Structures are given as structure tokens and as C-alpha cells.
Image 1: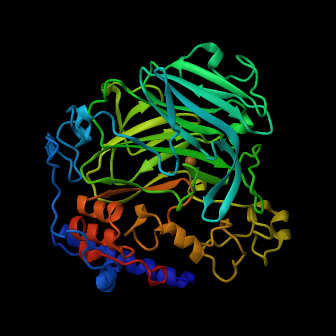
Image 2: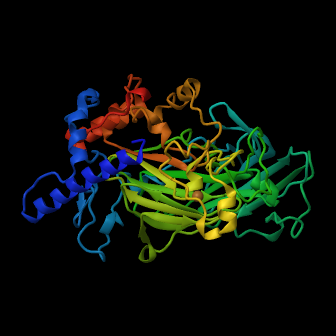
Length: 504
Ligand SMILES: [Cu+2]
């Protein structure tokens, strides 16, 4: 649709089709209202991949669990709300996962971030943390120079249980002073790490020992207490599982740590004074290099989302499900105060926990809703951004008659780079090879990398047999095959559309 005339034609056909549908509906006839949709039906599923997994599989409860498929009108296996907003089971609120509470908490899993190992010393969990410069691969082949811990940005995850005592030995391998703060912990003042207020800096090459009892539970984190080191990436998870398991038990406990940076074109280091941040990472990677969260159909899922962006808040949205906000940082919210949401604003240095029953199979995007955060490496264009044949004199003489800019972009509006372009996003074949080398993305639509950028990742909800194909098998999986299989079983296969050929 290149010319305005084509566009007008389309609008006309579209509105006639819509009007026909409207009249048909009034007459109670069941015709398809949208002609363009009908036309695409005829293109349809010649390219639908062959069935994969156990095509006759039906959702079922694992033999090890005694939970139900349905609670008060809410089904763990199909999109549903339940009957009564005041019910404990409305939108799956207290519907338990398959995991038995007696098995303890589900292991915390933050894709792409290692866990920090520890040694026991007389009942104390001893961790060693090294503050250092790190080269972090935001995208395949795109290595940025940042600060982190133990060779990782974000730093490795510290995971303990409420009631334990921890000793953390911090060594500073940065070329400058550092401080480490244990965010949210109620600990003795001399271990708090607030720059110079409570302690002297850890000098380059020096070590400081922190030791305290953890009497809390929740989602915590550690970070440098110097603002520019925070902006350079120095943060890590500090997860404290409750002594008494959370009720209802979850099957998955995922962590997504959001950060952003301003890295000008041709640079590999962030301008930490900038206000407009242009590289956005989840667990140290930008979409589509972020690793999808993969769960099984019917499971109860928790996602802990920490916003450690220097300056910007993130409205975070999950498609296909309504989630309950069940926790903020170092506390679980009383059940009476849980809030159901589709989009939750997570402010700077805040962490929110989302819980939901994965009752809608598919590859669901999980993303920040700010448009600049859904892209990587946005840069200002150089060169003209006005129509090249428009005279400035026209509107200098009379500001109310400024030349109109035609957003339909016919041949009079061919200014390069509008809207702003993303740099370094060529998605070469080497890039694609790395993106598709991860098991978590197997069987997704061939063009998925085009739409998952910046602060975006994917929540994959898979029936058991497809979960096994994706996560546990060596089977060669055609791009789009898992997606097509979900459409076949749970969607509308007659409306299936393959990804454009160029992308396969
Ligand atoms: Cu955002």
C-alpha cells in the first residue's frame, strides 16, 4: 500500500465489509464481517507444519498432585475468570500449583544469571562477591563494557532461606572505591553499606566482610551504593525463601531484572549522565536475546520483576493472562490486598511479584509498555528530518501555515531515518544462529525475533508433551511447529497463517 490512493481503496473496501457485517449481525445472520480476513483465509495453512508432540494429548493433572482442574468456575486449563469476584479462586487467586507444599519452595530461576555458590562455616552461609568490570554481551556479538560482580552483570544470585545467617566477603577489583548495600535488609547499621554514612569505602584491591542474620523473607537485591556504579550495572538478586512455604505453592519462581543504559553509536560504554536511555536489558540481555520463560499448561507461576533502571519506571504487561500482584520486595502482600492486573508499574528500585495460573497455551509476550523501551539502541538521526522540498520561508512568515508533513510517506516524503532507526539491529545470519541456538525458543514462529526487542521477553505456556519436545528432547523442531501445534489444539487452525517465507 504505497500510495494514498491504494490506502483510500483499502479503507473503502474495509468499511463496506464492516458495514455488511454490521447489517448481517442485525439480521441475525452469521456471516464474517471482515472481507480482508476472508481473503487471508484462502492464503492460509498450506504451510502449516506437521503435527508435533502427542497430537491427541489432553491437559491433565500429574499423578503426583491432588489438585483439581477447576475451582469455583476457574479452570487451570482454559481461559476463565471463575464465578464470584469475592471467591478465593476468582482469576485463579488461590488455585494451587501442581507442586506439593511439603516439597518446599520452587527453585528460583533467573534465566542467563548464574547463582552464587557458598560454603558452610559453623552454620553460616559464606558467599564471596567480587566487584569488577565486566564485558557483557547484550546481543550476539554486541559486547558492552559495564560493571558487575564475579564476571557477571547483573551479579550472581544469592539465594537463602529465612532464618539463616550469611557472611558475604566482598573484594573490590574495580579501579575505584566501592560500597555494597543489601537492599531491604533489616541488619546492624555497620553492614548497611551506605556510602560513608555508615562505613568507609572498600578501596581497590581490598576486602570487607558483612555478616548478619536474615529474619525476613522476600525479593531483595544487593547493589553498589555509588550512583554511577549502579548506572553501570552493579546489582544482583538476593532471594530469601520463606521458612513457612508460601500458600498456595507455585510450580515456577522466575526472576526478570530490568536495567537500561545510554550507549552512543560507536561506543561500548554507557554515558551514565544521560537521561535518554537507549539499551534495555532483562537479566543482562536485550530482546530477542532474552531467554523466554517456559512453563507447563496449568502450572502456577510466580515472576519476580525487579526494575534496576537508573531513571525510568516500567509499566510491565503480560499478554493472555490476568496476574495477581502478590508481593513487593521484602514482603508478601496479605492475600486480602492482592490486586489482579494486566499491567503493573514497577518503579525504580522496586520489585513486584506476579502470580497466575498458566491456563492459556501459547507464546505470550511479556514486556515493558514504554515505546522507547521496546527497542534497542535507538539513536538520533543525522541529516534532514523535514521534507526536502519545503521552503522554510513559507512558515517563518506565518507560523500557522507551516508546511504539512505527509505521514503516509509518498515519494515526497522520503527523508531517511524517520521514524528513528535502530542501529546495530541488522540481525545477520550469525545473529540469528545464536538466537535460535537456545532450546527455550524451539518451535516459535520464524519471525519472532523481529518483534521481541529491548525490554521484552516471552512467557511460553506449553502442554506437557510440547514442553518435553522444547526443553527435554534433541528432536529437530521446525520453526513455527510448536506454535502451529498450539493453534491446532487450542486455537482456530482454519485461520492459521505461516510466517512470511523470507523469515523461514
Ligand atoms: Cu520501560
